[in-house]
Structures are given as C-alpha cells and as structure tokens.
Length: 213
Image (tube, rainbow, N blue to C red):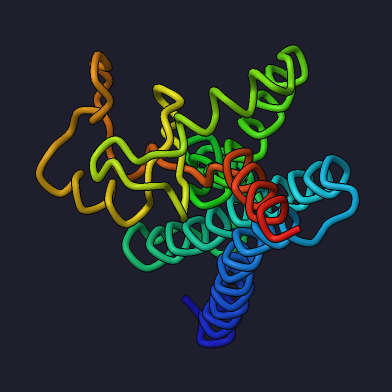
C-alpha cells in the first residue's frame, strides 16, 4: 500500500471512530431524556415519539459507522496481506460494506430505549381501558418489589415477562439467579432484558404529587 493511501485510510478510520464515540455518548443522553420527559414534559406522547425517532436514527448511524470502520480494516488487510490492487478498492468496497452491515445488530442501548418507549405506550393503551379507581387500587399493590417487598422507587421492567422491579435489587439478584423472582413466573431473565419502566415511573410521580398536594 502506498504511504499516501495508507495515511488516508487511517485518517478516515480515526474520523469514523470519533463520530462513533459521539453517537454512542448520545445514547446516554437519550436514556436520561426518558426520565426527564416523564418528570417535566407537558406533552409526553409526542416527546416520546420524537425521542424514539431520534434514537432510531442514532442507532442506524452507529450501525453504519461501525460497518464502515470494519470495512476499512478489511480493505487494509486485503491490500497488505492479499496484495489487492488499490485501484480495485472502489469495486470491492460496496460488497464488503454491505456484507458487514447485514451482520450488524441494533445497538443494545438504543434497543432498550426503543423497547422502553414501546412498553410505555402499550401500558397506556391497557390503562385507558381500565376504570381509574380500579387502576389505582391494582397498581398500588404492584408497586412493591418482589424481592424486598418494599415500595419500588427506581423501577425497571422485564422486557420478557413485563414484571417491574427495583433497579438495584434486581441487578444484584441476577448475579446469582436467572429466573424471574415473581411467584409463578418461569421466565429466564438477564440484565440485558431490563428496560426503564417509564409507565411505573409516571405513576409513582403522580402518586407523589397527589400526596404532596
């Protein structure tokens, strides 16, 4: 590989790594925005729709940038090890990139954010069918963590069985156990299956406001 071409590929790879890092950092901001929307938004539905779109776009960007970085590494290897003619790079680039892109999955952080928003909307749909008085009675009973039996303060939701837990408690529990702690539930569970319980966060906030007022 010529020195100029090698430097060009290295520069492009460094630029892509920088962009990838910035995109991944953006997911942390999106995660925080979930709670901010629950606590401060006057239009939760539309704000969550917008956040889902932003997260989806960021996930696609992260996926494509990661595929581009891997593609550059493969092409560098082909030139250095296989003796591939540099003039053929444009011809093989698309094939290598598309092949790698197909194997890339959705970023886990993005997937959790999207699943949490979808779960929130699903919960709101179900709740709208229920009588408000019955809803308050039933949810108050479900506010307790199944492990400590104490009120949940920082709720997370199982994306597998739709059960709610205290974040710190369930993460500690899952270090030694892999079954949902709810009685009668046989679902296997890992930390990757947990998402923000946005619906329960909103209910807890509403109860807190009602108690204060």
